[in-house]
Image (tube, rainbow, N blue to C red; front, side):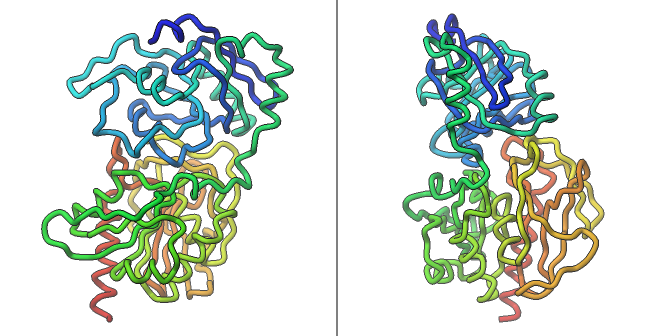
Length: 380
């Protein structure tokens, strides 16, 4: 760690008044966001650079973080997106043949305020019992201020419910990821917070991927997505993303094959007429069991979401686009983990099949998208 953060005190203040004291990690200063925990024992670089974590302060439940360093190849986007970072024991050294620098180097360079040397097990249990909530992390001079003042700042910060964030992380300009080998399909991918591994997975299957900003018009979407349309993961409350819903609706009306993940699953759910709601503390980690109800297979999945689709598990639903059903269910709590349309070519999952840090149980979903586009092309 840097000399400054090695000695600076830090304090974490939750909106319900719970306080944890430790030492600064990363940049010295103050930050605010929604406190959430993730259970992955590896993949911390992928977590930090996942745009879905925008405006969230991430707590690592694994105690030892940073031991294999970071590198340019494993970043999921152009920058770190978390609002703050909470770990118990930052590694004193980075040891791996692929390591190019330490995790602390990136946190300092990108201005990420964090805290270390706190009881992350106690903090995680608190969030499980009380739910995800607003939090402030203060280090250096800010940590010496009265807790009452710090709590006032936390309570004045924005809540996640009602926050429209996808537009803040979406690309400003469209770009193309070319197909690897023979080109089979042309796909429009709406960037709601897309991770780098996603278009690579599609390109490896012969898709030429046109990554489009959220501001794309329905007309442009259909012009580019001649074979299929993909809707990515992303941050914020799906109830606020009306333009994204309009894009999904346009694709469904045109009978273009649709595949959505994470926020894309919630947006498809809204287009089908289902509601969404905020989970108590969400699903975040790389070890969440999900049942594929179509095949009976149990997948271990990578997840990062605080909202979910409110759809019935016990029946097929009638929607504006025909029949739809819940295709995947979380085995921990019966949360909807996927949707499948029966009369239009569309499906989605709530988790991350690209999962660059693993697991890779769900990579077959990109093949399922290919099959859907192949079938639609045969029917055209």
